[in-house]
Length: 122
Image (tube, rainbow, N blue to C red; front, top):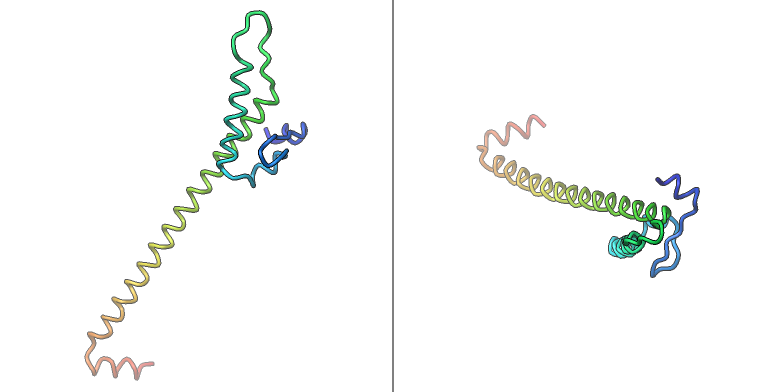
């Protein structure tokens, strides 16, 4: 799919101007969604039943649409993975703080002799 796009030097008309396939990775998800809707509309309009002419759906438009959908899918998966990673990091930080507090309270529970013994062992 991407090989075809690069060989065909596909370009996408957007509110930001004309973009190449590679540029789509840097476009916001909202703008990609708008582009996907426009391409889908173009495909649907071309596929409308016409008994006097052949189906004129452009293969290039379909390819553009599939590429935009794929990039949206990947970007959403990356966003989801980043959110999960941040949530796990936050939970780990909380657990480390709790562990530190428990260790401190455990040390406070030691007797004077036990504390002196541990100091001597250091």
